[in-house]
Amino acid sequence: MSQTFTRRHLLRGAASAALLSAGLTPALAANREAGRFRTRPGAAKQSLAPGVHLLRNTNERPSLLYLPPNYQPNTPLPLFVMFHGASGNGGRTLEQERAAADEQGVILLCPSSRQGTWDAIRGDFERDFNVVDELLQETFDACAVDASHLAIGGFSDGATYGLSLGLLNGDLFTHVIAHSPGFIISDAWQGKPQVYVSHGRQDQVLPFDRCGAVIAARLEKEEYPLRFDVFDGGHVASPELRSAALAWLKEG
Image (cartoon, rainbow, N blue to C red):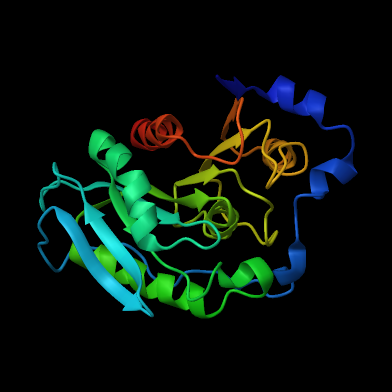
């Protein structure tokens, strides 16, 4: 069973300033341009049909663009850039997210990292980030995207990566969706996107008390619009949570 936490719940759980800062890793804070996307949405230059479109396939790790069945070139739809967890890839992400995208009518961009996880999880925003910037431009050129409903996020390591990029690029992305994130990579935040976080109380991979709860408390402290869905379960993003997150994107 899931539960949406309010500001009162979160502040009650924030015992000290140290707890609030524990979820941040400001290793990239000195470089204020690290992780900043150059691309911006504009008028689409192509007219793609609904379905799966292969944008990259590096070392058999596909990066995919998916247009749901209700997509029409003259009707912009919300976009969700979703990053996979460790050992995943864009193809697996699409398999897991496709039903929710079809149900809610959301375009998906599902990149693949070059290796098992994303560059800045263990280092800096470099090769993976640059590829994602290119993929974003290709997506904006290829289909009609609703610029008032642009989301970025993911699951696990992908949630950490997407949440961090969303906060760094809050002047581009209007929404951030993080299922079971671990931490925030940089504190050079821009803008104030709406944020959705889900986390299981029994998560043994990225523990709730040290990850999701700390991140949510930090966002509340910084006065970000936050929906925090806490559920009884482990390190998962269930179909129900995925659908709820995209419904939140579409409606918000």
